[in-house]
Length: 138
Picture 1: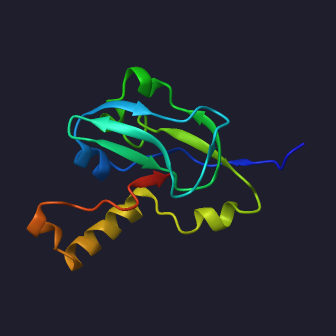
Picture 2: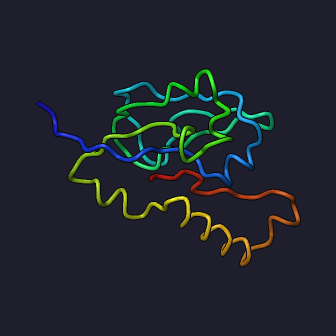
């Protein structure tokens, strides 16, 4: 029998990220029991503006995914922290704390973004905004 894994909270994108994407029209997510690797693409979100990779914030095994998004991907726009959640990942208990400690919840990410935007207004010249860490964990 393998190492037991603990469930990680729901994973998704922030309100800021969904707003930047525009209307979400399709989402591709890994199946249950698929492995995901931190900092690697795990799926895609397609909007009326672009197609963007969804990047895994942790390494583990997908425990469940939000299949509601197959028929209603707009839930990411209307309720990113509720009905728009994307998946839950099981974590190895030996690495769980180390993987979760550097992650931010949605509030911390919003505060981080505001402080960095104020310190680095270079995106104003190009009209582009960088969105590092656009994922959240509850």
